[in-house]
Length: 106
Image (cartoon, rainbow, N blue to C red; front, side, top):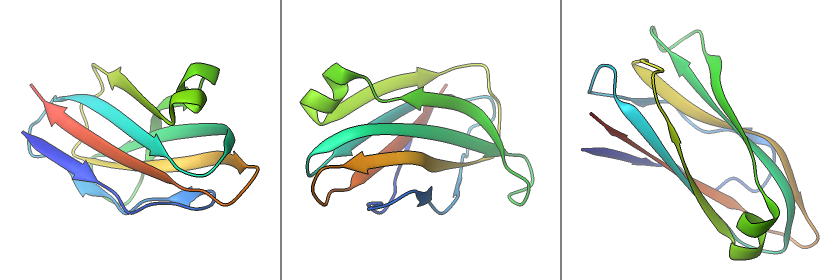
């Protein structure tokens, strides 16, 4: 079991990459929000070589997730060796952040 918890992002941006040690692992993505979030889109990107990343999933944060300041979702059938999160949209009424954790399991 591997859990990669990335540093908090306070603006649109990309987390550092993490290595998945289990080939063909299913991914569980958890995110936690601080501040007063209005909207967000989290793209999970994967790579086989750690250099060239492509989007393997995109998640628009729903109204219930915004209200709860957190969410959890799953990605299956996307075998990659390296992963990273790309927060492509992030809007707050006051300063805030998003913390993303990704768990890989078979």
